[in-house]
Structure formats: structure tokens, C-alpha cells
Amino acid sequence: MVVSSTDSRKLTLEPDFLRRLARLKLETRMILGGVMKGEKRSKKYGTSVEFADYKDYHSGDDLRYLDWNIYARLERFFLKLFHEEEDLTVHILLDLSASMSGGDPPKSLYSKELAAALAYIALTNLDRVSITTFSENVGNSSQLLRGRGHLSTFIDLLNSTPTGQMTDFEQTMKTFNLRHRSRGLVFVISDFLDPVNVKEGIKRLAYQKHDILLLHVLDKSEIDPDLRGDWALTDAETGEVVEVSVSPRLLADYKKKMVSFLEDLRTFSRKLGIGYVLTTTDTDVEDFILKELVFTGFVR
Image (cartoon, rainbow, N blue to C red; front, side):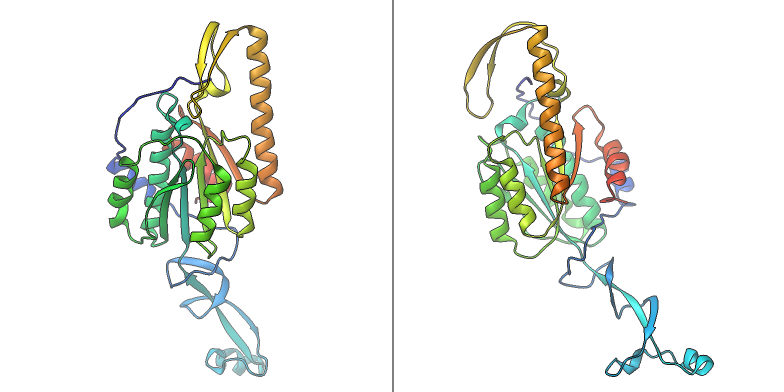
């Protein structure tokens, strides 16, 4: 139960906010295997300049990494290991279906700011990052870009993309997987109000072995509506109008079902090894990133 909005405000990120974002990094929980060297320290061992550990020498190992100082002391051969620095591929999937236009501020505007902020963190750390919008299918999408100079490209993309119509979560994830075969860190920003296809879409995304965080964005009134009396409620995506008399009993039943919906999505995600976090549009984006997302471990 959320009021539809015609808010036309454009996305902007303040310089002070950008400076604070630049101190952060995105983290993945798995070895993804980047394409080129970057600033992200991998959990793999390689041959970069940062020393990690020693291991016993075995026949066939590269003699260039023998530690002769240790051999002089112990008369045993040890190889030096180094942390391998590699880039991280980050994909940000942003739901801009019609239901995202609701709220005050609109969920779409809040989600665009969140998407741009995550993109800037990635760009600052020389990760490769893309933003893809979707509704009934994949919409506007950027190339994979590196370097903070590309922030304006993402902001222009977000400001030029209006909300669409219905959500087809499963078809969107199917299309995304076909376009992006290699694994990456994937943020999905959505209200997840597609009860038929959400779980199938999430499973399709998880099948690709991405490291995934679902960012569930709702307006506070969708969780705890304050309505009384007779209303004609219009579905933002289907246009269907339903006349209802909002009683305390109906509100209680709605809130119970919403709690069940949120818990079901959280539990489903956990079973698939997917991260999940809920926010509402009255929560400051910076506070959400610095508190909730840092707590998840995806941001540090």
C-alpha cells in the first residue's frame, strides 16, 4: 500500500558524500577470478609484490621463489607465496519497473542513488563495474567500466532511464546470465514485488555462481501502512483497480502477510548462499551503506 509518485527529481551525489565513499571497498566472499590485475587482494596465491606465506618446495616448483636465507639457516627449501592482486567484476542490477515509482521519496530515486554510490566505490578501487536496469526485461545497460571518471556515465544512464511497466524477474535474470558468462559480484536492487517469478529469477542468478547481495528497497508505508476508510487502490504495474474498506483487521492481516513475505525471501536467499538486506526509503543512503552493508561484509 504505497502512493504512486510522479517525482521528477534528478539523481545527484554530493562531493562530501563521494569523498566518504572513496574510503570504502567492495568485497566478495569467493574466488571469482578477475580478468586483469587490479587493486583487489585475492584469496588465491600468485606472484605479486605482497608477501603472504611459505610452503615446502616440491620437485617442479618455480626455483625463482626459493628463499635462500631460510635455506642457509635451516637447510630446507621453502617457496615464498604472494597474494595475487586481481580486479573484481561488479554488476549492479536495478529494478525500474512501475512499482518502483511509488513512495516518498520514490523507491526508484532512492535505488538509483544507492546504485550510483556502489558503482562509485567500485570505480574508485579500479574494479570493473556495470549498471543494468530492468523491468519486464533488461533495459538500459552500461559496459564494464573502470576508474572514477566514469561516474558521470552511470549517473547519465540512471537519470535518462524512466520506470517501465511490469516486472519479469525470471526473464531478466535469464537475459543477464546470457550476456555475462563470467562470475562476478552482483547487487540486485529491487522491491521484489513480482511474487510469481522472483524466486525462479534468483535461482537462475545463483546458478551462474555469482556472489550475490539482494538489496530490498521498500517504502515505509508498504511495511506499516497508515490507512483508514474506503480506498480505490491501483496496481502500479497491471493498472488493476481494487476497491477496499481498510479496517483494523484488514491492516493487521496485511502486516502479517508482509512480515511473512520478507522472512520468506530472507530465508530463501540464505538457503542459496545469497546475501539479503532490507532498507526503506526513509533511511539515509549513506547510513545504510556505512552501517547495514558494512555489517554484511560486502562493503568495508
